[in-house]
Amino acid sequence: MISKRLEALSESATLAMAVKARELQAQGHHVIKLNLGEPDFNTPEHIKEAAKKAVDDNFTFYPPVAGYPDLKEAICQKLKRDNQLNYEPSQIVVSTGAKQSIANVLLSIVDKGDEVIIFTPYWVTYIEQVKLAEGSPVILKGTLENDFKVTAAQLKETITPKTKAVLFSSPCNPTGSVFTKKELTEIAEVLDERKDILVISDEIYEYINFEGTHFSIAQIPGMRERTVLVNGFSKGFAMTGWRLGYIAAPKWLASACNKIQGQVTSGTSTISQKAGVAALTGSLDATKEMATAYRRRRDMVREKLSKIDGFKTNVPAGAFYIFPDVSAFFGKSYEGTTIEDSYDFSMFILNQAHVSIVDGAAFGEPNCIRMSFAASDADLEEAILRIEKAVSLLE
Image 1: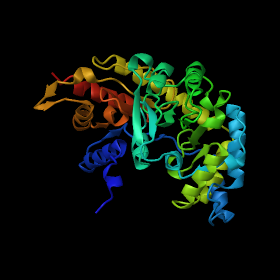
Image 2: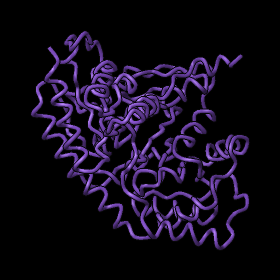
Image 3: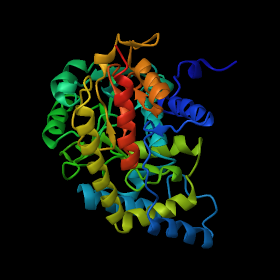
Image 4: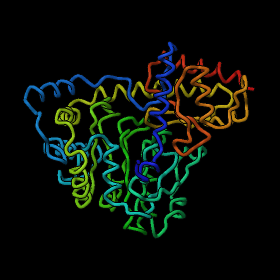
């Protein structure tokens, strides 16, 4: 018998769609995959070389649970260089990806019945991890008209005596929205009234920001002590398979996460950690080139989608997703298939156009779909042509 804890969890929609896409591929179809949040670039050469050297230098034994000292120091220097934030190595915990970082934090602070406010649309895992920690997720919804961003006024109305934490990403997965310094300052002012509430700020897409310099809520005076900054290497350095993430947090919480991690996975891959040092201390030219390519693709995808009747989009300011509202197609049919919701729409596009996307319900917004533009220009152009042809069949 499986545990009630597991029964309460939902399967990852992005991974579930990947399974269905592979099934079609096995049947001989050319499926264009726009469902996973994975860079289509290779890891930069200087990072790979550092990993090879680590193998040759025999960094193949158990590392410290919270990470090698040189990587923690490199993270501290990065936070000072890029974010004007001062942290000590004792405040850094390196984990097997940002996903584990967030899980560590939630398992460290959330008790049964505690509420965690989640800005919506949200990354699919947030809800499930809060549930795993036996907390209560509280959905706070941003609208397309406000670039999918939650306002400080909304937050103030949602906080209760049970609120333990606020969790959000900026740049956001799935919308690409980026909170401005002004917006984050207004949110911080609301939280000043409840200094016991922790902010969990997921900044994994920091380097994919099309609007200028990234700004973290931890940079606001008084917030660093009440913020967990979550980041990693997957998106900005094209290192998804290396499984390397980290938090910068108050020392008491870093110690708690170290304790949790010590009983779950212990330290993350030694080779990945040495690669991480090279990523943070080496040239960022490749990272900037990737961000430039994503911006070009964003402009191309948005322009083409805007010409298809029924698609409504914001302008993603970061990350590599677009999150169009497709509710105009609900109720329409083709050959006995009726589109009732975004899941039906996603399955119709997969089966009819052989393009894999993800329905927005998985991200807390059932009127939308998420499309990744971390794909080649040719694939993106072909995918949109296929989608346009498919939706033209709906009546």
